[in-house]
Image (cartoon, rainbow, N blue to C red; front, side, top):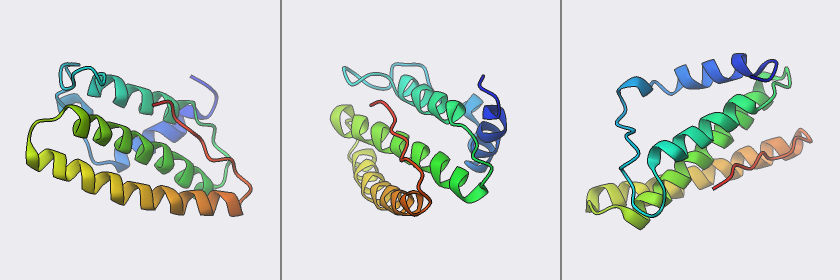
Length: 121
């Protein structure tokens, strides 16, 4: 783990209010689009690798941007492979909301001369 990464990853995980140990991540949730577990692991890996700047506002925006991009990626996979109309509607709503917030994080980070971290799809 890179220096300082542990301090960044723990607050982001606890702030989500999600107990990942109880989430059904068996790798069989999605078809050809890849597994939800894989998408979640990619997002978590990139959050862990993100380096702390020492500025809590920049670190928050950076971590949340990565988290939101991960949510968009998972929601897009649900739209592609999901069957349940309620879940597909939720995925559409998540994509719209998260993209708006990503744009806000981008504007904030640009003002702070911070690069926008991209995650792999």
